Length: 67
Image (cartoon, rainbow, N blue to C red; front, side, top):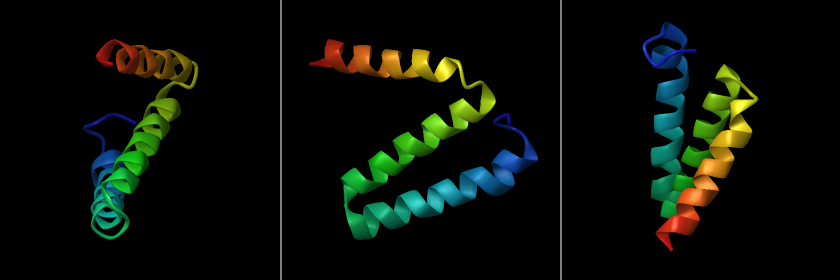
């Protein structure tokens, strides 16, 4: 699934935006951000699952560098 594909634009993006806004409004900012993180990882895992480990390592390393 690409960013300009119909399944992304008509399915994934609207659902993620609606759920993220709803969670942020009713569940707090942390819940919205956590859902957005999980949805993003799911999107990239759908494209090529082996790269998910590399992405998780990159997130963790950038977090440590930012401390």
